[in-house]
Length: 136
Image (cartoon, rainbow, N blue to C red):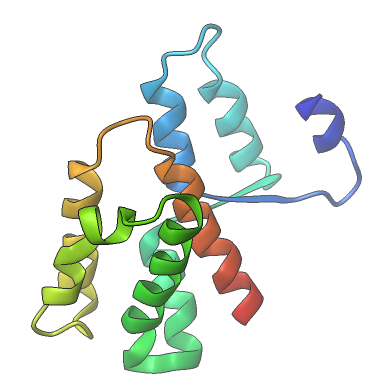
């Protein structure tokens, strides 16, 4: 079915890089990563990282980009699981200089690493991406 959809002319699929990481974690047989990598390489799948999202938001919001990202992440987390943001991303509310992008991204990564697998993080991060795309 996926191949059928990807055969549509000019079809593009956008997702967060966490989807790729989750595919690896699940150890699906056959391994979907070669297929996924090929779609990324040919541009059929557009893969975004947290840095990419913050950089896009920065074009509109400047130094407030990280605050907007936090807002989008809260919405995403609450949409999928009430209390998820507070449980796993509470450290973002404690960053002294939230406009420091490198510090912000390091804190996000540390939070991500504490989230148990199979909590739909790829979907949550992809929803952040979708919200960013709506803003742009």
